[in-house]
Length: 386
Image (spheres, rainbow, N blue to C red):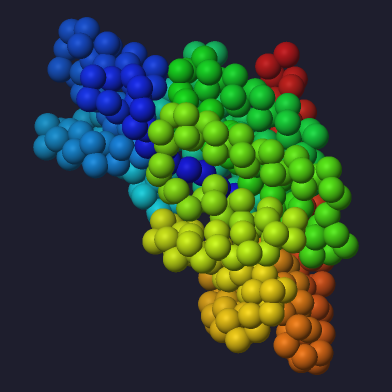
């Protein structure tokens, strides 16, 4: 699962930097604030919004100034600062370092009766749990989000709906996930949050691509599914281009590379993988690098560049411990088996086919566990918000 920080460069403001309507609204509220405390809280909220636009330097500058202006650690301001720091950390690495800050912000928000903060932090706790494959830790924070979030808390509700959509996609229920992606996008539109709208589009595309790659490894992907995945990736690319979004610029090209590999457009796939795998590691995607190296090795083998294929596969297998999700490991071992067949090493290829089968079985169990966790939650949400 992925979540992308967004950086804009086109349209909108005098300095040429694109921004979103929620930032403009916060600026207006900051200008109209009648007390120092109100202004500081709004600045902390703005820091979080800037972090989600990948304006991390500006977000961090605001946070540091607020830390200096809050020597007595006033609880509400401290909690909002902590939440903003969690977003900065999340969008700096896309890792799980931010979880503790989200958890503490939630606890303080709950204790002081700041339901906006508690609901939003809780949604991000669920997001972090899903990214880490921690199925059992998803339902409770999402339940809290829907319980605490007012109808105007578009950020919390949009993020919670996105977590549900991603969970359903990961569980293999893409048709059902579509409803929740649309709900998440609706909240993002209401909030004027173009960054979130792009994330919704990207995540839906990423799961489609992952599905067709997995199917291609297993039995061959359906042509219509491949076409839909390709169109989804190009839709994300078109939106990003139109807005001037260039943060984490490797993620869309790598999705495109995976589609090209399934389409048997080997040379295009090779070019895209080679240009972007190294940067992906620097942009917080280290856990996906071994899988992408195995995919690159597969494409190289298909065009007869066997020495390069062997080198890439050796690198992928040497680093495979960084690849933790069973579906990614399934692809890694499947592509490894195909490369080893091309290299004339049938015994080694069979070993990796067996490992791939084990990972696929593990992934199917994971999907069942995910469905068991998310279906009752969906029913609760439907009843509570009917």
